[in-house]
Amino acid sequence: MPIYNARIVNIDPVETRRYAGLHKSEKFDEQIIISACEDAQLLIDVRGIWKMYDYDCKSQTVLADSPFKIEGKSITKHLEGCEKVICIAVTVGEAIENEVTNRFKIGEYVSSMLLDAAATTAVEQAADIMEKAITQEIARDGYTMRWRFSPGYGDWALTQQPALFKLTGAEEIGIKLSSAMMMIPRKSITAIIGLVKNKGV
Image (cartoon, rainbow, N blue to C red; front, side, top):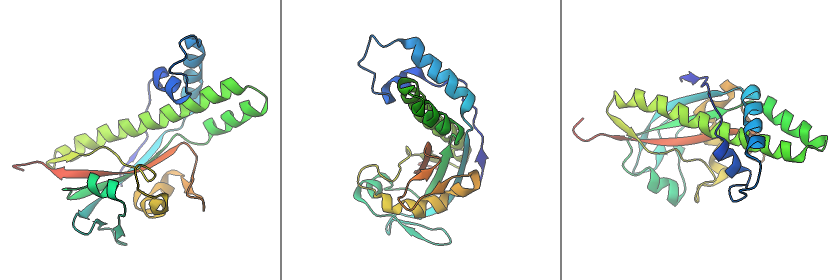
C-alpha cells in the first residue's frame, strides 16, 4: 500500500480558470487567477495511497479479501481485458477548504471561488502525478494502465463508493466518507485504474 506525498511545483492557472467557469471570459484579470494558485500552493497538503488487486473480468469482481463486484456498463467496459486493478485515493487536505469557507464568510466571493477552483486543479494534478509514479512501477511488470475512473463517472453509481473507498485505504491518509457518499476533505479523489498485460510479456 504505497503512500505518496506528491509535491506540486505549480498549480495550473489555465485549469483553475476552467474549473472556475471563466475559460470564455478573456477580460478576467489573469493575475488574480495566478494569485489564487499561489495561495493554494501554500495551503495544500497532498497525500495519496494506492493498492493493487487481481481482477476477474468475467464476473467484474475485484478479488480483495472482501470481493467487490463492480456494477455499471461504463466501468465494466472500461475494465474489459484487465487482469489487475489499482485503487487510488488522493487529497489536498482540509486547510485549503477552511480558507475557501473563511473567505466566503467575510464576503471575498471571487477570491473564495478562485481558491476553490485552484484546490480542484491541485487534487487533479496530484492524482496525475501519482498515476505517473505508478505507471513506472507497473511497467516493470509488463502492464499498461488505463486512465482512472471514479464513482459518479458514466453510470458507475456513487453507491459503490464505500466499497472502493475501503479498497483504497483512504482512511490511512485522513480521508473520511460521509453517509451521503461525500469525501471529507471535499477536495479528494478515489478511482480505479485497470491494468492490461502487454502482449508478449
